[in-house]
Length: 88
Image (cartoon, rainbow, N blue to C red):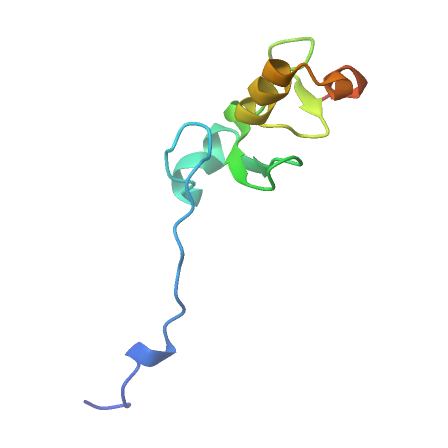
C-alpha cells in the first residue's frame, strides 16, 4: 500500500451515552436539539433535556444536576436541593 499503514494512527473514539435516557451523545444528533452538559453530582455527560428542571420548564437548575441525581436527592430527602439556584 502506498503511503504506509495508516490504521494505527487512527484515534480511538469512545462512544458516550446519556446516564438518564441511555441514548447516545452524538454531535450530529444533539447539536441542534439542545446539546449536552455535565452533571455536577455524578460528573457524567447527559442531554440538556435530561437535566433537572428549575422553577420554569425551560430553565434548568444550577449547578447542573441530571434528573437521576435529582431523583436520588429527593428520595434521600437531602436539603441541598433547596440551595440550588435557578438559571438559564
